[in-house]
Length: 260
Image (cartoon, rainbow, N blue to C red; front, side, top):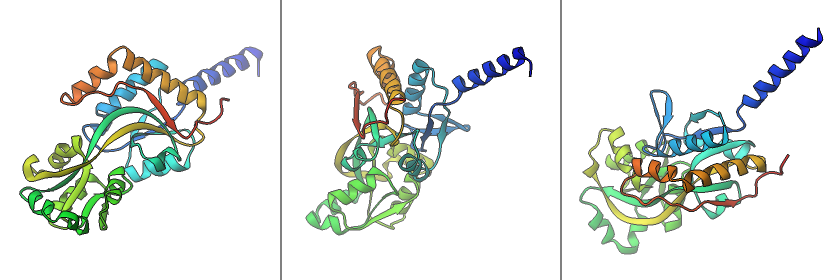
């Protein structure tokens, strides 16, 4: 091969490598935080992630996948980022968490008109069946609260449908997605009511074990930049106008992989 052609080939390969996605990014169907619209990822957290990508010149696509698949990839493959992930002590030992990207209230819901009856049970409420979606922090919250029978469904929509059909008495979910979930299953927002708030939950960008430290640092710097210049707050308030945007930047959990 002529020298000039070889140089051009090496230059092309170098340019392709520079443009190649540095990380695999997954999110889930959890509107209005993350969802798919006309085949494209959308939502509050998606907009925030894209703002970070613009700052750090990252072109990794955002794939909307079932939660169970994204979470499995996060736990088993290096170079994976999943969002949004609720912070817990167990997860801090399994992944690197950057955030908070949002703060959600974990709410215990019942069918309209039934909250008072359930609260009147006192400690007996924990013997009543509840539902949450499989692998979620909300299922963990139900168990941690003391509920002995937690039914696991593949999506929040299936969980809500089963509760409204009487398969179980209560549903555990993130407060700011409840109305969107009910809309998805063609049910009015007032078909459910809050029994109680179980916890306030910080949500994060989660990086898998073995993700290079310099990659996580790029994301941390980009996140700090959009929080500092007001971009993050404007995006958060656009989607969640009644909620206060968390302005701190924390990197917690498993230390990222060594710098190459």
